Picture (tube, rainbow, N blue to C red):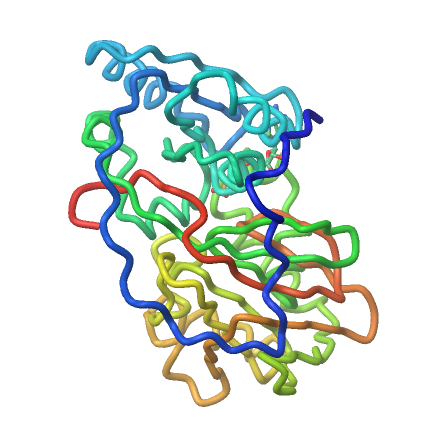
Length: 330
Ligand SMILES: Nc1ncnc2c1ncn2[C@@H]1O[C@H](COP(=O)(O)OP(=O)(O)OP(=O)(O)O)[C@@H](O)[C@H]1O
């Protein structure tokens, strides 16, 4: 992997669990971006593979006089390498064309480079695209990039078993959902799309062992059967898990699920689909900037829909360090 020289100043450490920071005032809008040279990092294995969407986007950008190069990924982790190498090559913007896992890899490669990120959502769930109101329509995607409207988003960070200082943008999960993500194979996702998650959720609901997690939120101890750490509001696609979450604020919303077992999984799943999750009495949501999660044994940790590693895991957040192209009205 190509190593980028460290960004000016020390790389900030994951926020200490003991520190509670007040939310900063809303950030001033960024000046519009005029991206002339655009690199597209494309995961050809993502989601339902909508090659036409990407082709149309590239045509629209070229028709508007932009220089566009598409680099396909060849293996997992390749998008990190391509994004790392992109800084210093004269690009004005990097587009992540794929699902949330591809966006996550590109983000991890871009961090600290000051190169803005845009999305071409080709994945299965496309949670970040839902979060910023980006529709999978080539004309709208091109219009957003050409308008150059950006937002500075806060980035979540985690360290854990097999996880070394990894960024996430939308969410991180430990417990039932991380088990489901670990169970869904690439082949199954390709064959069944979203239904792969439904199928594996049903299977895991019956087979999962529902351990209890020890969770420290800014130093305060809690216990939970499952945990979702939300940087954005959305989860699993167009559904909302944490209504108070805001990508622009360096603060995470932590959903603690206090009961385990198949009936509670069904209850939580139904509440998520009907927008009532945050109102359940056995779910509590807490704002936090430093989070420690431990389990009796190593349990899977998922971030942005891909397995990162396993517990114990510590999670923090860093303010406005990544510029993201957002559509009008966001
Ligand atoms: N050429 C490749 N071959 C196999 N795997 C790849 C390749 N390029 C990237 N990957 C891996 O594919 C994984 C899944 O990609 P991604 O999340 O973008 O698609 P998805 O899972 O279909 O979408 P979503 O996350 O929205 O459900 C990524 O974690 C990445 O490591």
